[in-house]
Length: 176
Image (cartoon, rainbow, N blue to C red):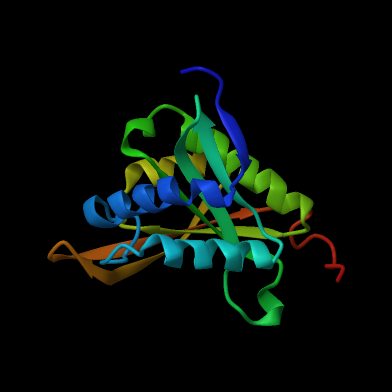
């Protein structure tokens, strides 16, 4: 693979982002969504993340978007403001090529620079070994499992929870 570029997403990336997510919705269990959102909905989701000052990144190679990742607040209540959840989706041709690792590593760096203290991974399907291994390789630890939390493709799916400290984590008070 030629040089991989990790950059902030732009509105022109939305067709590729929408297609990548749709493929993940209809063929995978990394998301529990059952119907893929259209491009307008994906634009609204992206705008919501960016409007909070959080990153939405894409991985690009030779002008083609191979994947994307973003962080959002784990919960909307103010006390959770230092705790983020990552989301990462790859084009099927980009899987197993190291794209996810580079993309997630950059997302973690940017979130740490923003002052986030914890990153959570809420991984759909306990059998999603690639996502679990990716997060573990980047320092996430298993923190829990939600048994039979979702029903997709005519079967019950567990959710794996993983967590990684960013910056000083809970070793120092947070500064507003």
